[in-house]
Length: 201
Ligand SMILES: [Zn+2]
Ligand SMILES: [Zn+2]
View 1 (cartoon, rainbow, N blue to C red):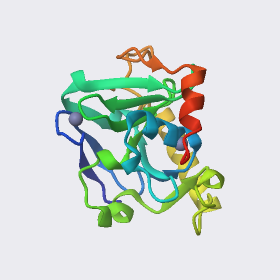
View 2 (cartoon, protein in one colour; view 1 turned 30 degrees about the vertical axis):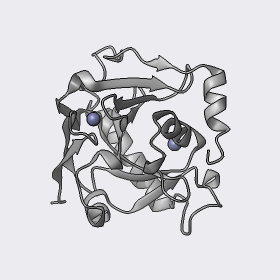
View 3 (cartoon, helix red, strand yellow; view 1 turned 45 degrees about the vertical axis):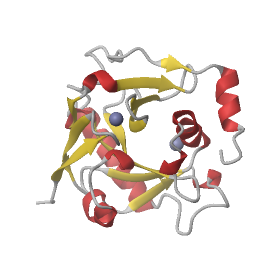
View 4 (cartoon, helix red, strand yellow; view 1 turned 135 degrees about the vertical axis):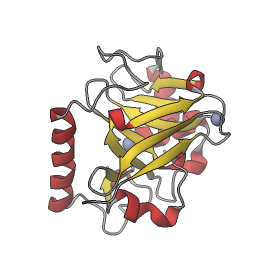
């Protein structure tokens, strides 16, 4: 049987706490996203400390129903960088990014920085690292970036499994009709543009 574990989640100040259940290489996608919007989001949060030297952020995708908030649900806020953008959830107490979602899809991308887990355990816990939008990385794509055929099969199989098994619910983020439980703030086109013009966006 593949090894899985429950990994605690918390914001920087500890008001918001949660858990991702049954996380393991076979049940998670260990992603690194280098896209401009993820960096714009961190600029908006004033949490540039959370992207790496190439502007990448680690996002761990798991089935949405396996993510729970256990304390500080009232701190959970949602922002969208545009009317069609991802629903990006963060803790307002300390502006820690927590999770990214698309309402109708049964998975959640949990910000690696929100996991209480030593960095050395990443590959053992989340599986091999996969890159997205590597072409947008600062200073060029990181070595070895790109989605391999094996990686693509892994991601596709997991997405299909979660959809098939109805793993989108229950979730603290959406009601049964996939309406967000907190009304998202939607940034204006000007605000998004300004964030994307940041020298390290
Ligand atoms: Zn906090
Ligand atoms: Zn991104």
